[in-house]
Length: 244
Image (cartoon, rainbow, N blue to C red; front, side):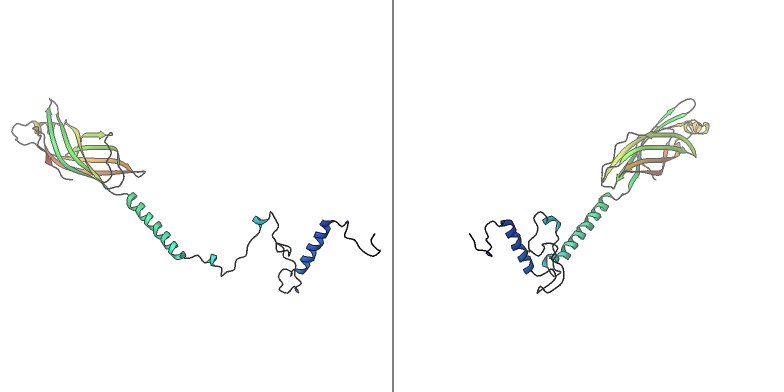
């Protein structure tokens, strides 16, 4: 039996002993913001002065990095920024170069043939023309509608419309043969074309051409006037050039 006044460690809870030791260690650690422990500021709010991070709170804490830390000064930053800007500008230029709308031109080439048929009251003509269509774009061009109107001496004598023309491939030229019927019912034209005293029955024909095309998600209309001379008194199958 222990003498009076002598405290025995038997029967003391170990958890109480551990708590007392932690409290003693905390008192020995300098307070938050002090160097020699003489500051009157509060303890470190993060680790309570123990120097340890509480378990389970790693994702909620922030680390303070000095301004002269090498991690805040990545190497070759200007080089990477310049390369990125250069690649972006190059990509934009390529997109503008390949997708910028270019011209689609219609060029008359020649009159392929003129077939003339006489009736008691009119002169029926079938005029076949050759046209070249050039696509300067880097995408195909769809031809929605091709219409042609024949005018002789300011009088509309015929009209033709085609809606099934094939597309023009990118950066290519394609030839189309278009036929228009021109019935001359005017009595003056009849007498002129059927006259046997005149060897060459020349008419000045004006073709008004309109073409609707679509490419790059937009539509466009091309118009052109073509002038040509035809003989309304005889059949002609010899191609001859025309002018626009």
